[in-house]
Length: 203
Image (cartoon, rainbow, N blue to C red; front, side, top):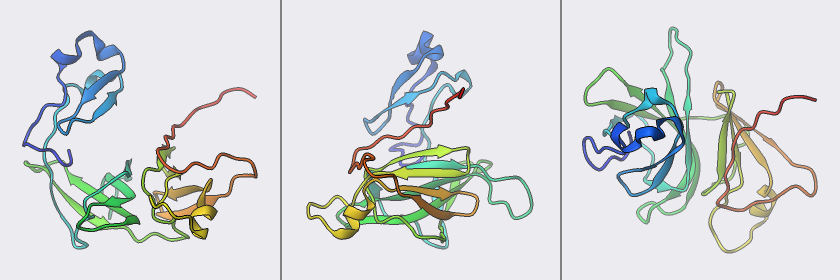
């Protein structure tokens, strides 16, 4: 939905996928990047569409090396609806540097063309330092786990050394940060890290 180069560029179609609709499929996006499509026929065909955004807080700067997740909102009075949440990343030359801010984008599904509103989320707790190329995964729809990454700089600083190996958790219901310090000897990654959720059964 975001950053589409044209009003409706097709990323993949049912004809492209064919029998692969029951398998994992590699999808080439309009910007040339690749993604993996899970075997869910109800999501086909895939299409890109632009989203007109606005917001009282402005909008996040153009950036790369970050992750996003979907925050499901309960239905009820005062509900903002589902939101796309992003954290950190590194901006381009116009706004250089890494970030540790949190932004949320709410989408109006009823309007055509689609529109959305950005808001800069005021979080509580101690935030992670600015990060780019970190790993992230959503746990039980409430906790967003972030691990690794750095400010993408060559010189070592005390805060960067202290952050290595720390697991950061953002609770999406309260937008509250917490952290876990791994025991001695745990991996201490820098950048280009991937995270995933694994379910373990048994004792």
